[in-house]
Length: 100
Image (tube, rainbow, N blue to C red):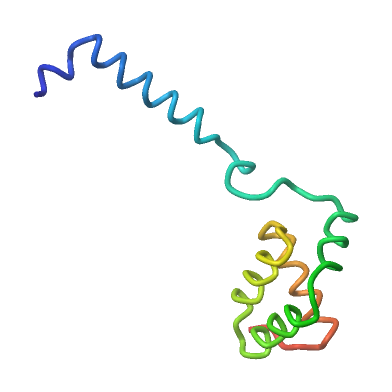
């Protein structure tokens, strides 16, 4: 088996498969999270969040589950992690909720 791996054709095929797989997967930040949004897009996404979803987010914050609140907001808006975290923290400050 080991001597088959040293065959140049097999090595070339393995390297080619790795490179093609890497190219198809994508790389960098854009492949793992949504495209960055500008301030207007973020504000528009936050305005689309329903009152019942905000109530769920507020309940998670009040229960000390900030990460769960961020996750709910991300699911509702499609915002990235950083923007969702900042929005949840702004909501906490606005409503004078304590940070956990």
